[in-house]
Image 1 (cartoon, helix red, strand yellow):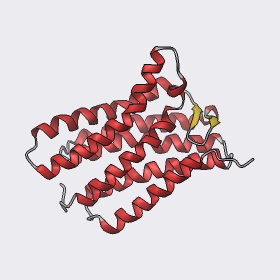
Image 2: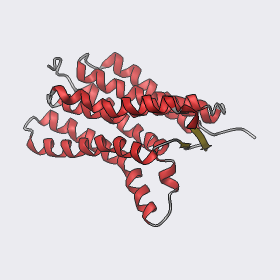
Image 3: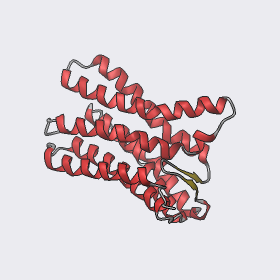
Image 4: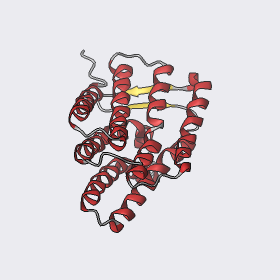
Length: 225
C-alpha cells in the first residue's frame, strides 16, 4: 500500500518554495520585504521537515526538534516584522526572541523527549515537554500582532499601508481559527485538535504565506530605518 502520509506537507512546501523564488525575483529589495520572505521560508522548511518525518518515516527526535526550532521563531519574527513595518523600532523589540531562544536551548538539552506520535496525509502530532508553557509563549505574539494591526489600521491614513495591513490581519485571523476551534473542543473534553495544533496551524499558515507574498510584492518603500 502506498504511503501517502506527509503528502500534503510536500505539496505546501513546494508551493511555498516556488513563492519564495518569485518573491526573490519580483519583489523590491528592502528590509521589510526580506523579513517577509524569511517568514515564508520558515513555513516552507517546517513543511519539508514534516514530509521527511511522515512520508519517509524519519521519525527521529532530532528532526522533530528541528521542526520546533524552526517554528519557534515564527511568531516573534512575525511580530518584529509588523512592528518594523510601522516603524516601531524600539531597541527592546529584539527581546521578543528571548522566549524562543530559551525554548530552543532547553529542548536541545531534552531532545530525546521529542517524538513524532502519529502521521497522516494532512497532519503530524508530536510529544514534547512543557507543551502548555510553550503554547502560551507561542500564541502570545500572534495575539499581540492581531491586536496591534487592528488598532493601527484604524489610525493610519496611508491607504496602501492600511490595505496591506488588512491583508496581514486577515491572514493571521485565518491562522488562528484552528486554535480557537481546539479550545472550543477542549471545553467539551475533546483534545484531539489541540494535540495536532502545531501541524494544523502550519497548514493554515499557507494562507498567511500567500498574504505575505502579496504584501511583499506590493510593498514598494525602499528604506526603513
